[in-house]
Length: 225
Length: 379
Image (tube, rainbow over all chains, first blue to last red; front, side, top):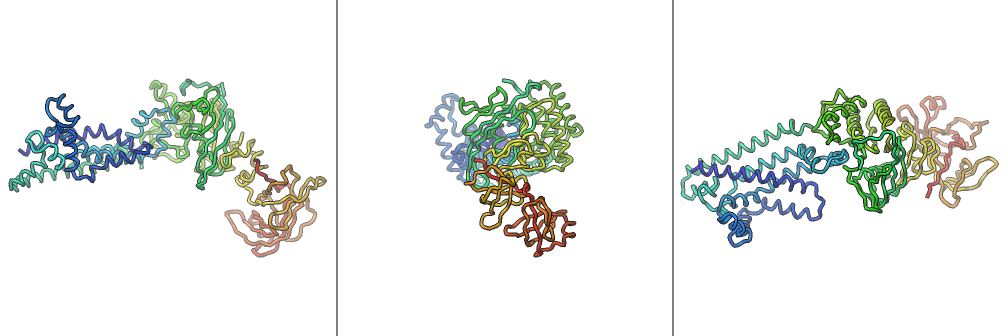
């Protein structure tokens, strides 16, 4: 039972963190460099999941992807089954929930790059895309890695959003944190302890690896102080 | 459109700039950059105090900032023209711009930095061109190092090589050498001159140091508050400045607000009275607008001091006065002398010894007529 929940949780975290890598990098780039007046609006929106109770976010996502919403109906027409209470539904909710954890470190590290370097790149004939690939991405890499790992770890431990959107279906939506909740409700404290310890160890290992990597990245990837 | 790859060394292209742009000054008020000039191949020095608009001007030429109105062109190629709505992006202008901070890419080696602008050329040509320019600027030995592993002068050379390897149409240098010692500075300038003897492009060199103006000097454009206040050879602009801003930059320690009193055409002089006093100076007869305020600039090093009333001198301005302060700065003694108006006088420690000068003592002050520079801002 633990193994099934663990595999599911890892699958969810991997999927979500990769999606956030693809979505987060351009979004962070935009947040770091855009001069639009309404940028603050997007910034606030992206940061919302940090302060919002997961139940609130989960509730609205559930409504948004439910069979009564256009998105839910559209998905059902294509996939043949509803989005709510499925693994795919969990992915949608988790991506939104972990978004700030991916985007914020990325945007911070992009914004901290000396703007004169970007000017210098343009003056040497480079397009924006080339400047992004050759200057922004390599110099912002520590932030990108941090965002990737944080969103992975954050997804591992999420509970409220999963419960609201996914419910508690073994193999489809029962993640480790839900399993612990189940075990405690069943008064099986010994099992709950084992599961909780596993999650604790896993999250700690990831964060330890992240901070260890960041220190080395400061030498290898960044290479300049 | 001609790109950086196709160099045309023999066709020297003139840079023409006409710009209007309002921008906030460092003092918080805003004023307009309003400039019109052309620069032929070779060095043109842009000289002015900080906040005069020098960097904004370069940014406009490079396309990092957009002027409200105007036209910038190199030869036949229009970089921006508010009339026809042309405004090329910085990466399409082929303008070499050495930023004040150099902005070398910290995560790349010197060679990678230099080859950055050669994207699109075949590998072997990139190698050839970067090898050539690294040799010319004497940094081949550091090709494999990162910017933080080389000295300030070497970084300067690397940044210059990175800019020039793209064979720009025009080169903009924003106070590039201010932080370097005189020897390193002149070596780099020699190498830059050697490069430009081959390529013959206009080079705009921004500085606020008067020594640099004389060292580089072919053409000088003096800027103040966004306008050109003087233009010519370093000698014309700095030795005989017409404007007070240039005078201050050129090192006139004494500047007096004056009123015109009388002409003495028979002496070739005129008398001016320092405002708010009865103190009068005899200065060279100059063409001035008598209705507008006028200033007299005198270099502190051009004033003589004497311990007793001097006789048999050609100088027409001889005044008794009192030393109000004496300070030693390095190998120079700075004396403040009050003789109706306060003068700053520079002399050697030896002169102080010989004349037994001390604060509070009496002294005679001697100023040649031709050491008095008449200044009136051109409007």
